[in-house]
View 1 (tube, helix red, strand yellow):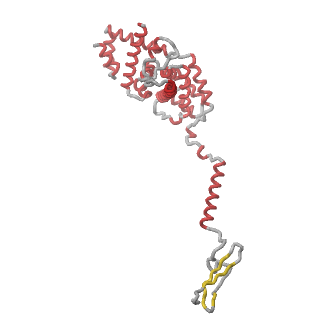
View 2: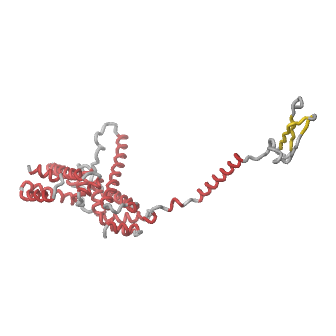
View 3: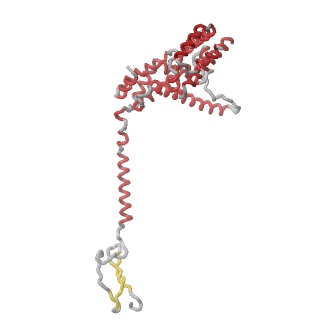
Length: 161
Length: 179
């Protein structure tokens, strides 16, 4: 019976008054006394088995020497400045990317006018007010070549319309 | 000086202050590590790693919590990582060398203690959590609540671990004495 109570006492949390009553029983009961002595003996064996080792003193020197290699992150540096540090090669890469985007933009949205029909008379160097073939009005097309010379096309119906 | 005051000094850049913490918990930390790993040298190495990990993350520590349990739980995890690493390596080597089954060999770690003697021999038959709970209770004299926080289990589970550890230890020591 004592063994059963002992087991419960070890496993379950008890109130102080209950613990006092149980401890009082243990101190009086010869069987429980033996168990208690055995427990104390075991505790002593475990303590001796894990007594400080001769190499324990090396712990702090070992930690201290490795601490120097670590960059300590204190509360004042909670948000490290690392993210704001932008290496030079990144700046260069960003600059190149910006130039590329600007160049692409220029090519796509503002292509150079090498050749093709002149947009209208105002933007062209050549201004033709009208053209007539056999007395009939004709459509005019002015082309600028890459050599900056102009080709003039006149267009009219066969019937002269 | 209390732990939190020492931590404040460390956070202000006083590296030597951390020595107070290390020397304060040195014996108990190493006892726990040795109980898990079984080897004094490896325990020393694992504890050093844990202490460095704690130091680098000291600014993240919530000072309303118990520093001691935080420190011990990190060391405990470090030691378990070492066991897992060793197991994976051992498993790979065994698979290469043998073709037969080896049931339950990797289920639980039974470290070979580098110190001879009946107590170490008996302790090697205990489960890792049982051994750790026993050492933290008997050697470090920590409460069940603290041990539960370190081992990530309830107070009652800690009591069961300690009880089982003592029961097994008694049995093993009896068997060893009769041989």
